[in-house]
Amino acid sequence: MIPANPDAPGLPSVSLVDVASYLPGEPVGTEYFTQFSRSDRMAKNVMFRSPKARHHVGRDETAVDMVERAVAPLIERHGAQFISDIDVLITHTQLPTNPVMGCGPEVARRLGARPDFVYDVHNGGCAAFVHMMSMARMVLQTTSARTALIAATQNCAGPVFTQPDIRKLAQAPVPGDGCGVGLLVKDDSAPILDIECRTYPEFAGDMEFSTNGDRKYWEPGEGQGCVSFTESKITKVFARGNRLVPEVALAVCDRIGVKGRDIDTFVTNQPNRLFLRNWHDALELPAERHPDTFDRCGNLFAAGIPVTLDMENRAGRLRNGSVVLMSAFAHAGDFAGAAAIRWGAAR
Image 1: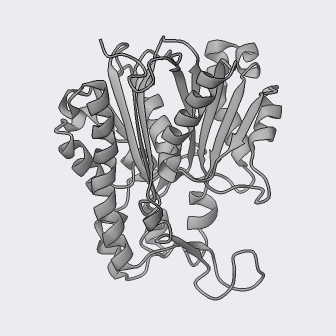
Image 2 (image 1 turned 45 degrees about the vertical axis):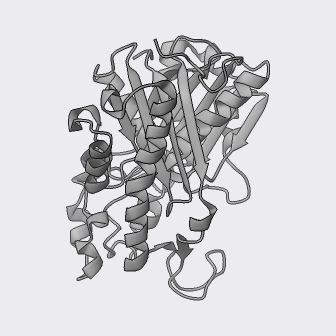
């Protein structure tokens, strides 16, 4: 039996007891983008090979709306009172609706909750679900709080990547929108076995958001904002991603005493097909133990892990008592995280 908290045996166990998710609207086919695409050598890069479909959030659908809809199945399974009584609320939003403040307080209001701890985190990127698990576990282990809700919202595919100038670019068809949430409880019913979070400050300046001109994104004028790529940066990001995700995943495996090839289910962020293949190869895992939602949802950024977990859980492919390993890297490689749990969630 793998012990919970091998790195902190004196602290109480914390469990990820349930996950749920929400995908907005109907699937958007790649043909939407091909009508606008231009000849671009970047389009041949493996980083930008398109998924078959993705979802786009509507113009008037906010991050709070998405979290509320993602939480609805948790309310059905655990009851409205249980969710409204949560002690800790942590949210990550890819594109904040209000740039001045996070969505945590408004999410709490929608859920009828009054948590003692509310955090909106913007770093963590595609690894934000693991990052929030780590934060929630720390709060639950060191305070009287007993329950936590974490929510990862990816909502920039529709608003950003369908802009008239941006939808022509090679990267435009890759992202999709969605939201995934997790419910954590201070008990040992589905314990977090170990978490590894690492920051790499030396890579922090390698991903930029620009308007393709001198205009700052908040200033009036021409130019449409988007993450900017160059071929040299893509090469660096690809090399880092190939290395970082298995690196943090295997660090967790080592501490809980399990070989990578013996993990029951490996869930990662879903940036592209080549990353997915390289990551399960690095752990010596067969592809069927590494769920892939890329062609159905595109790159969901931080929502990729919880949405994929929820889909696998609802499909009945996660066996209670099995070891689930989550791993992801963020942005251009400035953050990476992995977490292992003994699965026991409801569905």
